[in-house]
Length: 444
Ligand code: NDP
Ligand code: 2IT
Image 1 (tube, helix red, strand yellow):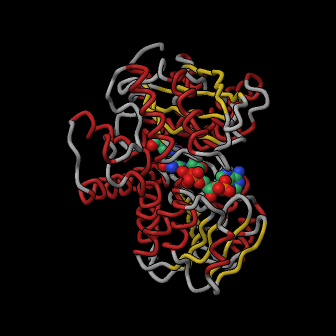
Image 2 (cartoon, protein in one colour; image 1 turned 90 degrees about the vertical axis):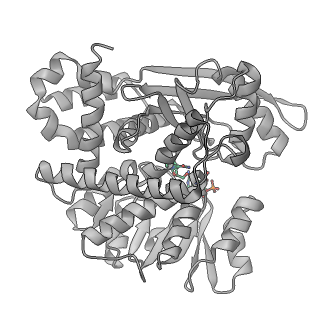
């Protein structure tokens, strides 16, 4: 049996019930076969893959807090410190009822390669809780965040592990988490990113994942003889990534016609009016349905189905496995020619294979959404320097990093004879740096 298959079988056996983690490992290992087969003896002897798929450490803890009725509630808290070969653990915190250890392991594993691709010195980590922020008061969210950080603060630090936002964690949550970290440790340090601008945050971090997604999409289109201007775009989700992907796409002359949330989707043939979406989502914390109540040209449809809307470009920006084979076929049949993933692993394996086998341009999440964490690393740099860069400076660095990720992924794919396969290219380029650092650091 090949080394890759052996290690994959072992992952399935040793990590029962963690489907998303198995899926992420399989996707990465499958596209690394060419590299691993060429170095099999060396990697086997060093148990390189066995080490790569095992998190360095998982911290799991109880999060008790008191709700507005005086009732004590208990959630599960986690931090997966996956790989520190190239820098301190870095990655977001997710607050969503679906969160479990397997999902955080898939995210931490992906994060390791993504962070490597950015070219910046950051390892891979992810954390979160099954706490559901929806419908909670600010005080309840603060109570939860303070309890979560009381425990987490023992395991993180500016040179050790630097969490940030992800689903359900934005500026409000980062603020509460930061305040509690400072109170627990007495340290005013860049231990979290996505901070507010008055206490060490970086300009552009809010926009970074969405902007970065459009920068790399634009690069991919131009290298394949296409352009973004005038194209129709369907974007799933209506959170941080979806909103700022929409903003940059519109700035560059595309027309965004649809957005969604977990309840349904809106279609606006005239192009989405983003200021209304921002008011609903960022100010009111409302539902995307409200857009159709305010904009006569928009139609709201309950449930799934956003991928049946005809478009040139599709950008899944909500959550894992939100786009399956049937959706991929519908996109192709309706004329879609490019897909870039703002979310982490939003396309199922079958959908990804369909895109690759049917000549569609496809940029996988670990390359396409790396602009968020890259800008987080720029926030860390500014904190260390005790300086703040301007919007234009950070935006230019972000743009250059995304172009760099495109080039690394395209070149690695070409080098291994799979030109245009950015899945293989991103996995190989991300892997090479992590492996070199791991091998150099001995058996750890
Ligand atoms: P937000 O919490 O801001 O928004 C999430 C959006 O996705 C909401 O519209 C939400 O709808 C929808 N969504 C979440 N879970 C589900 C679900 N199970 N089914 C359907 N829709 C769902 O999160 P972000 O925008 O920050 O994150 C979106 C994706 O981007 C995630 O995969 C995240 O890991 C990834 N990402 C985020 C980065 C960042 O910097 N924030 C960086 C790189 C990747 P509803 O409100 O109804 O729950
Ligand atoms: O998935 C991701 O890359 C993020 N949620 C951002 C992580 C970060 O540390 O900024």
